[in-house]
Image (cartoon, rainbow, N blue to C red; front, top):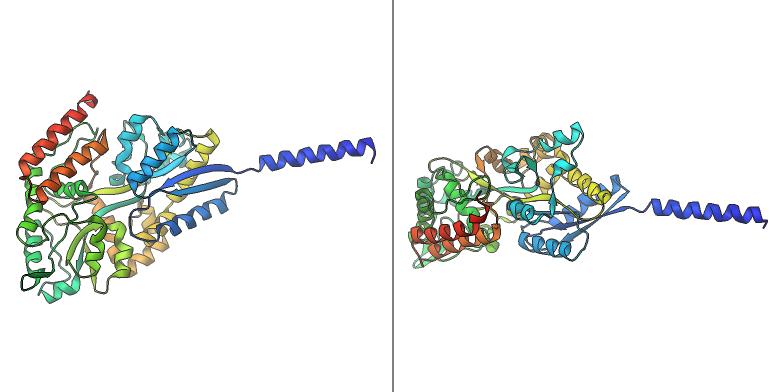
Length: 426
């Protein structure tokens, strides 16, 4: 081989090496919470696979991290340790805490084109109440929900109730639940209604206070209204369901309530719409789904998870994570996700897709949570969110279990919340 030939071969080899290096995909790490029923990991893997197929320059590592609290803890621990994490689905109500810690970037930093800015405005306004603060968008809805009322239509028929007329008010809920209780001597085989009081007690309480025209916090997340007269009335109503024999005494577990319902142990349950697909598959009876009943007004808080973008990794990695979020929240993917899980489609356009139109024609129960967004409110979200939620959860549970009366329990929770939030009140 001549000297010129060897030089040419070396040059071609160097060019090949550079080409391989240039072709290395941008890596994106995404933490994802798995906490609600349904084949979630398989669905997320499928959607991520579709993104990678259409974006071969990006490689996504999805890390499934348990429930929302687990996912937040693990993602923040990874960031603190210097591990690159570009995005995660975390509680929509974690916004203030994540912003206070300085670990997230607003989506406005990335939405530079008219198309991008239109995308930011494409989601249901009720879902964005827990995603926007100080004029910027920090969270994009994906795994989002409202609380809905599941009921056993067969049990309604057996009790002489019209299965097409579920209770629409607090008074009707009590009256129907009394007729639905099924006893065998001193043993209760079926309860009238169950509202979970572990896991997300504050969320259920937020529904009751909304129905009594009382928000739980101000939009800035610096003030709570736990012990207002309307809040006290809402908690007294909840506690009376078990005191009057319509619901079991003691705490009702979030994690096992769905199974109790599909096994016929309660005729009515309040739970996340994120359980809809699993309930429809598991129940052996005619399942009804209805909006939550009203008192002075109807309503439910929204719930679930938003996508966040972390200040982590290179600018190219963060841009790739932004592309991933846009892809996963596009109408067709949102529709596919809604069908697979029961979570709401996050934009009006998702309900215009053939996927959701076809599904809703077969399963009209899927439209209840969407329609309830018209009267939905933001979920409890404050600075020091975990501490404040625990104060309220503890107060609720002490009342449900009969350890305290509603007013002193909520007075104490409010006083403690005031102390926690005082540094943020400007």
